[in-house]
Length: 335
Image (cartoon, rainbow, N blue to C red; front, side, top):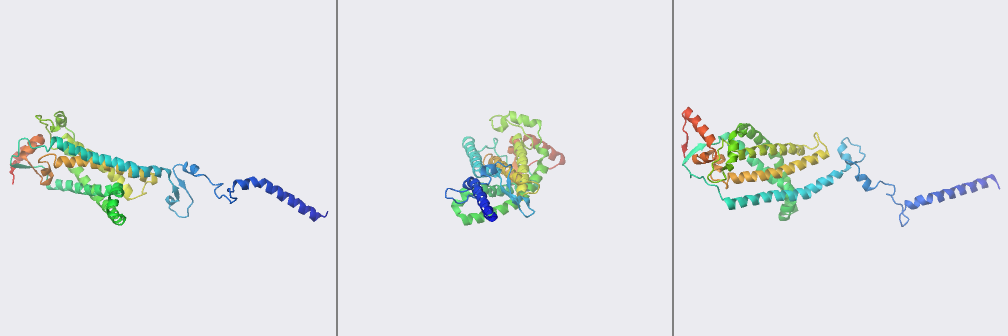
């Protein structure tokens, strides 16, 4: 046998041995029909989702956020936004309205016990009322446009259809964003103007002991604002700061925060906003249909003298004494 014949025989034997050794590996990477399995050596989805806090890939652009392929925490956020927030928000808001309706049916409108005196006293100056109504109007707009984000697909979309709902939602988004600046301005004005009158005093304890004026035959003394109003003030300031801070993080995304930070900001913004709406609903009820004469304070700036005596007697006494020292009229006849 020549040298070349022996060389060909040795090569054939080595190739045959290589095929025998590689056969199990090829079988593992092939499907049942003999076709190659492209995912046989790829990391499983379970292993990918175990990466914390996200799955990233390779990109050629400077924006590293674009490299995020999957963020497992996003599924938790989506469940909160699509399920928990909708149900929780509906329960809180509808529950608050139901409680206020029950309160009205049981208590009715709280009247001025001594009736109207026919005399008026100034309770809020023009600029004070401007700050209040600026904040109130912007809050209502923000509340309605914000609720569209949470409940729009479930409530508005079936009524108006996808095309009109898309236009409404786009408009609501822009209105919500720009109105937020007016709300922050109003919140700052209210904090500066009314801070001094909302500090706790000894009379607030006496007001609480007397049942806040809701127990018949028991007078609850109060300064310019009673303890209940002060609680609404401080809760509103705290909630306003929370929704403003979280809202600006959403308005200017990824400035100083990452994707997880944005999700947390959205959760805080949504939860605090829903609770804030419930608080203001109670505030609106008491200031309108819940109590006679209350709306006039912010409506015209003046209140009936007997209303002031009944609800804010210490404030009225100080006001009348100061006006008497200046030689000003203590009260004006009602028109």
